[in-house]
Length: 170
Figure 1 (cartoon, rainbow, N blue to C red):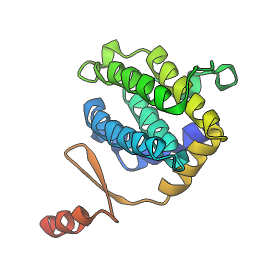
Figure 2 (cartoon, one colour):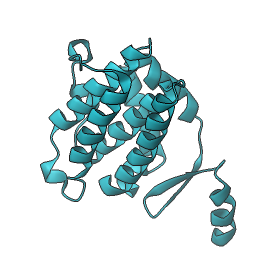
Figure 3 (tube, rainbow, N blue to C red):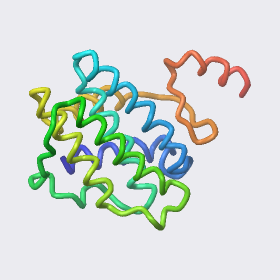
């Protein structure tokens, strides 16, 4: 996991996401990804990419507030009880608490990240996969992704908004 985390951190650094955006900007992305997870869990669809995408954004936020998820012991993740829909509700509460501090990085604590990741791990297990597989799926999806940072938000080349951004820059 640590190698994947370091690759994600480097990917985000290379695209200026860590220093070029703020935790509150990433919080918007986090809830976008959370919505996709909730939708796919509710509909019984594959959610590996969604779990991984949330992990990617948590990795970026952690780095922005001078933490690294490499600090966590992934072999000691605690099991969260419940079915996936219940776990999504728990994750919502945990992520809300975490991003509630987005305006003040001094209040971020690695424990908030750990609680979120424990819940992501439990959702992954309920879907007969592992957290590591989910993170790998997400990383494989983004590793070659290019785009631009606009107002703290990364706009990928495949986004329809990208063309208008590029034409405004010329």
